[in-house]
Image (cartoon, rainbow, N blue to C red):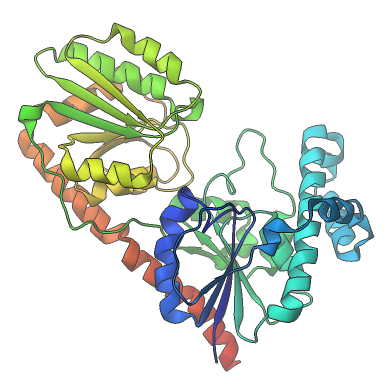
Length: 420
C-alpha cells in the first residue's frame, strides 16, 4: 500500500535557516521510503528550495485569507472540540486563570489551534490517503490541531519532533494543551538524550511514546588541516544575544590572549545580534596579538567553506541553554575540529574530555581561558582530540545514517497499522 507523509513546517522549503539545514537531508531519505511527500508550510515567500519530484507543496495553509482567519478565530468557542480542549486545560491547571501572562498565551494558542484544526480537517477531507502519516516538525499548536483531527480521521498517524524552544519550560514558559497532545499523538521524536529524559520526567505516563533520533550534518569527506604557522584560530558561531553569552566568551579569549602574548590569536565569529556593538566595544581593549573578525549573519555554506579552506584550532560556545546537541558543534566535528562548550542541554552528549573540553554550566573567565590553553600547549593531546572529534561525528551525527534510521522508524508506524 502506498505511503504518504504530510510534513507541517514553519517555512520550509521557503526558508534558509534551521529547518532547511535538516529537512533537506530528511527529504532525501523520506523519498526512499514514502511514495508521496506533501510539505505544508505556515509561511511562504518567493524563494523556494529545489526538491525531489516526489514532493508536493501545499501553500493554502499559509495563504488563507487573513480576514477569514480572524473571523474563524472569533468563533472558536463555538467549536465543541475546541471548547472541550479549553475546559480540559483549565480543569487540569486551574491556577492559570489567575495568571494574566499564561491566560494570554492560552487564548492565543487556542485561537491558533482552532484555525489550524479547521484547515486541516477541511484539507484532509479531499487529500488524506489510506496509509498516511502527519509529521509536525515542531511541537506547537500545529501538533495539537493534528491530534484533534485524529477524532475525525482515526487511522491517521501523528508524530512531532521536539527540539528546545518548543520543549523546555524555562523562564516561566507555558505550553498549553501539551497533555492532550501527548495522549493522542503516536510518537514524539527528541533530538537529544537530555531532551528525552526531560520529557520523560515531565510526562512519565507517556514516556513509551518518546523516541530519540538525533539530527546530523552531512559528511564533507574532508578533515580540517591544522597549520600552527598561521596562528591560533578560534571559531564561534551564534547569534549575539544574552543567552549565548558572547561577552563571557570574549572576556575568556581576551584573558587567554593576554597570557599567551607570543602567540598570534585569531577569533572568527559567525553571527550577529543586537549586542554586537557591546562586544566590539569590549574588544577595543584587546592586546596586539589578538585579531577579531566579525562575519555577521551568513549562509551555512559559508561556515562550511571556511572550515574547508582555513586551519581552525578549536570551536567554542558559551551558551546558557541549549535544546539539543548544537548543529554548530556537529559541523565542527564533521571536519575534525574539537570544541569547548558549556554543560547545558545536549552539549554533554557531544563534548567530552576525549574530543574537547566540557566547561561547567556557568564558567568564569579563567575556566574559559584555561580551556583554550589546553589546545595551545599540548600538540599530542590536540591531535588525539581532533581524531576523537571526527569519530564522534561518524558515530553519532552523520546525517545520512541518522535520517535513515529516523525514516525507518516512522515508516514502520504505517507498516504496523497496515498489518493490523
